[in-house]
Length: 451
Image (tube, rainbow, N blue to C red; front, side, top):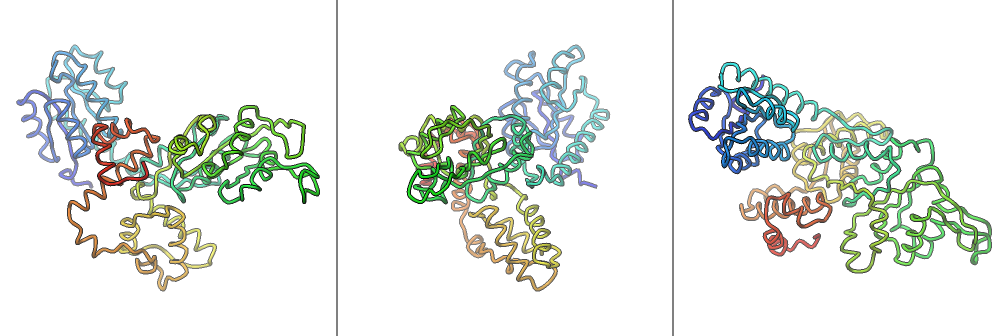
């Protein structure tokens, strides 16, 4: 059983008497209180309570439910899983129904009867616990390409993949190197009605500039020296299926114009050819580069950017995915045990700690390498931290000052928020709960070149 004293209950009411009454009625819980929206949101941000009781009549207009409903929306926007129980008057059924429509867990009519309300609160905590356990255990898998993650950020990504897969919308995947952009692209393809057709991937950064055009569009016999036969390009090979253009930010500027025409007209001409060939293909693009900055520097076409960005998925880096690193590591253990014919059963406590504290600059690709080598080098049935070969430098972490820790945390939070807000400074500031001038000041202070 969960210890109730570890369960945070936020009580929001502008009546000091009711606050005192309810606080004494719920001594089994870790109770925090607030008397208005500003204080309530501050408490939610600080404590992230599992359950909230909310009086809809809050200042500055206690006779009206608008402030209470606004507070409800703000709480659920910040903590979607929090269970909010709204308190209403006997003749206030309309606002109670509105609150339920906005996402409230339940409503309770005044006057408050603590004995009855306690049952509603207990049920809310129980439902929250069940949802949290389900979230932690759920491994989201999209067809043959497995998207593993129980973190909120990856749940959001998975839902987007599922929703857009059925539509023929051109998709842009943004994320650091090694975050699994091709895995997501394959998942979109496998969940679409094109799944029986080809999935063709081409990395724009790995092919020399003078060869990329012929790789994409193909060429006719005799088009240039060495063109001894007609060769079909990657775009034609993907007919009816999906074409994945990885690292499109590295596509040469002169080829971007030809790609734009193809995306607009859905026809191609092979090099050395004259006939237009109609192509039915879904396009998914990906890059780790900041395309908006490249547009400003005139190294990426703005019209092409809007053509490939009909919808955008921001893939979070591994360091921002909470405990997903452990889920991924265990999945990789199973995979490499099978491939390498090993019998590693799991991870020691110090290995788990090392995985959680490492910053993963190489993301999932780095994790794959570490786990694979550890499976090979493991002396026992459990992999330890030394076998993972992670240099987390615990001594330096223990000697870090609070100022250094805060600076690192703020810097990482800004970079992550900027990525999740699609490189929009105003939205980034709003997401972080600061003003734009403050955000610009922090960017300059920490010399964040990624923005």
